[in-house]
Length: 376
Image (tube, rainbow, N blue to C red; front, top):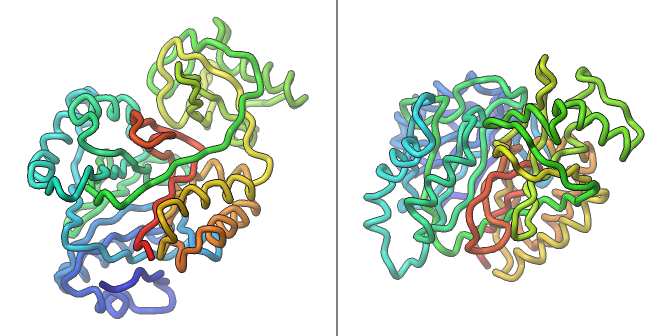
C-alpha cells in the first residue's frame, strides 16, 4: 500500500498527486483554507476509482508543525469502509444514535471474531450540539462490542460549514463512522489540573451554562479568574483567556473532562465546546505549564505497543491556542520519543475517547488523540 503524502495545491496538480492511489481507499484531511478544492477532489477521485472519505479541519499538522493549507492523503486498507451518515438536527440524541448504530450493524455483524474488538472511530461536524449525549446513546446500543475514539471537524471560527465529504457528498450536521482493527490503539490525554473549589452548574442546557452556584455563569467565572489569577475578564477578551482557564467536569471516578468556554451570551451565559449536563460539578482548570513532560509520558504509553511506523494525531485547537509556539515543541517531543518515522494529523475541535482502556467513551476538549499505526 502507498504511504501517506502531504499535498500542497500550490505546488503540484491534484490529479498528479492522486494518480498513485488509483483504485484504493483514501482518507483526506483537508485544511479549512483549501475548502474550495473539495469538488475537484471528488471529481478526480471518482475518475481514478478512488473511494474517498474526507474532513475539513482548521489546520493540518506534521513533524514540522502546523499548516494553514494543504491536504493529507492517507491510503487505507480495503477493509476500511467509512460510512458518512447525515444526522437530522431536530431528532433527539437517542434517535440519532439509533440511526447511526443501524447503519453500522451490517459491518459489525460481518466483523471476524478472530480480528478482536474493533475501534469505532467517529468524525463529527463540530457544530452538532449534543455529541456527548449521542455518545451515551451509541454506548447504550453497542456497549463493549467496540472501543471508541474520534474527533470533531469543521471551522476554527466555530461557524457552520459543510465539513465531511465522500466521492459525491459534502455535508454538515453529519458523522463519519469507521471500524478500525483491534491493533489500532488510539490514546487520549489532556494533562489539565484542578485549581479551585468545586462549583455547581445550577442551570445548563446543551453546551450553554446559564448559572453557576446560582449566579450568572460569566460573573461566577469572572470572579474565580480574578481570585485565582488576578485578571479581570471582559466578554470581549473572553476567548483569548478561556483557552488558558477552561472548566472541568468532575466525574464520580475522579476523572476530569475539559470544557473550553468560547463565548459569552448577552445574558451572561457561557457557551462551551461540548455539553455540560445540568447540575454538573465544575471546577476551574489549569492548563499544563510545559508541553514536553506530557508529550514524553504519552510517547511512553504508545511505546508499550511497539514503535509505530507513523503517528496519526488530532490536536485540540484550544490546546494549540494555549501553548502557542510551544505546541510545535509538544508535537516534536512526542514524535521523537515515539520512534515513529512519520507524523500526520490535524487540529481538532473536540476529541472522543476513554482516559483508560475499555472505559465509557467521553467527549473532551483540550486533548491530544494519538494513534500509532504500522507497528515495526
